[in-house]
Image 1: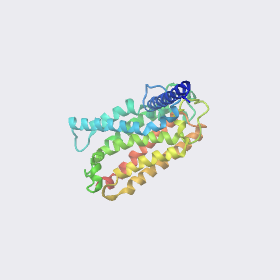
Image 2: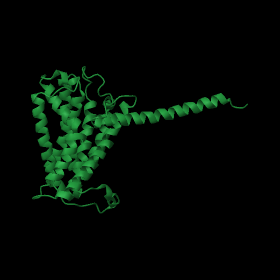
Image 3: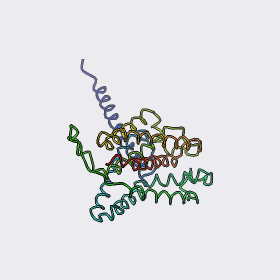
Image 4: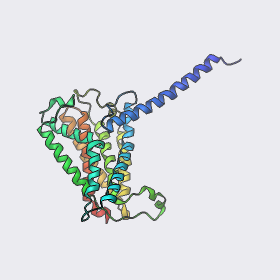
Length: 296
């Protein structure tokens, strides 16, 4: 017997609908990730918001590449004074605090404001920063500029064994923390989202990150970022330095996320961004502290 043409048409329509749904889900997830990473893209929402977490670390790699490009271009134009590369660091800092890392800095400042209960309205709207938040914002801005400025040049070297085929993925040592810091920061958002619950006043402000409650997601991205850190810190076979840095960042970020979740009866979008900043700053501090062993 001949096949019923209506059944064939129905099957084709179902297939087209499934493919359209997948494409729509990927587009929605990417849009939600942009809303989490950058200001001006709105809050994450839609059916793909739970999958947005998988775009955070890859998106932060692109942010790191922008930092590397700005640093390198400014270095070539302005050079350095007494081995201090202030203008390259300033270029990265301006891109960081004015746009690419703005949400993290503001989230940390507003979390400080709410920590003492002085600014209850900050959980529901933009509001204004209180005195504690303004002081925290000023200190964070100066501190981040100091961290970017303190990155040493190091001794350039590339593997000569089988890894030489991947030398294109080994930037100069001075550029490596510029790539790694944004990745650690956005991973800190994933970790914070997997701890505790959403604060009652928060509502659905961070639905995309709530898809990261699976420990597999948190650990999986941690292993990826920590593995890349170990590779970039492994000059002369010193793989354990990068592993220790990764574990230290994990401990600091986890402790902050737990304390913040308890303090606010769950996470707000501001505390999640604060955890991201804690993770990024902790990485830079530990990385710079170990730089003598990493670079020389």
